[in-house]
Amino acid sequence: MPFREVTADQKRNLEIAKDIMRDMGFPDSVIKDRAARLFLAFNGIDMDGCWDKAENLVMTIHESIARISAGSFDFKYMENSRESLRDDLDEFRHSGYMKRNPDGEKAPNAGTTRHAFIEEVAKCVAAYGTPLYEREVTRVKRAAGNVAALNKAESKAFGGVVVLPVTGEALEITKKGQGPIIAGIVEEMLPRFGADAQVAYISDAAGDIFPQCGSSKAQKVRDIIETVQPGNLIRRPDVVALDDARRWVFVFEACSSDGPVSERRKEELTKMLSPLGYAPVFVTCFASREKMRKWLPDLAWETEAWCLDNPEHLIHLNGEKFLGPYEGEQWTTGRG
Image (tube, rainbow, N blue to C red):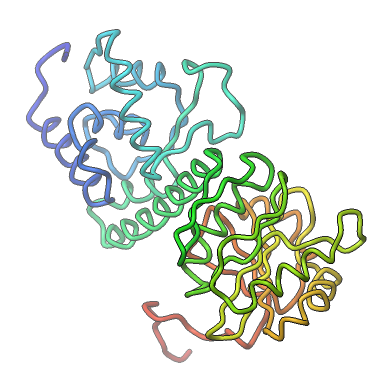
């Protein structure tokens, strides 16, 4: 409830905040006054609407309520409103626009949990009313989509069930360790980049998984994998998928504690899978680009890297094969 009557300008700025949220692609369920006040508060903006002053604030729910209760917001929430506000924050997070405890420190309880929008949100708000606004809207939508995909993949991995592309078979995998990355490989990476490739093997902590696979080479993969006994110097790959149309074998390493596809590992896997007669495509998969930094010097040339937090992109460890401008980029040419 407001402490005093809201001015016409403040009402208009609250509507502008909801318009910005709508432009960014926020779900309709949170495009309302209550969530719009949270949106402004976490972007460091009062009801007076100084959009160019937007900044990415990290706050607990109690701190956000205190901010809304002060300054030009002049709005007091009842004690029992906190659960509704938490619902709005959860909706922000599930949609990919907000992160929980972005500084990486685990909160001891719900009251000390810290929240912040992804950095692209404040940049977009700051660009409102300028020629850069549409570009920033596109960027925040892309970034939120990536975060939402990561949240979805992690949620499914922690649930312990993944659904294979092509066949639709549901499999249980280990929830911890490299499980979230394997879930991302199966449900995010392969549908985007693997066309009709079918998963023929998954190395799970609970035991090897050989899914139903229509490839003529599926049994051959099993024969090869089973010759690599535990304790051998050569490790089994984490995921193998077969693309019969292109005669490719996708070889995935889920890099959490074990290493990536290094030059040595590439040679081992090439030799191991050579009886298939398919051309190998080596992909090292990470939970995030931040996690990839540790292993970047070890990645082999002529391989790929993929990160769960940016599932729409591949990193090609090669040069001129993929060198060139990208469609949709705006270029200016000239001399001097």
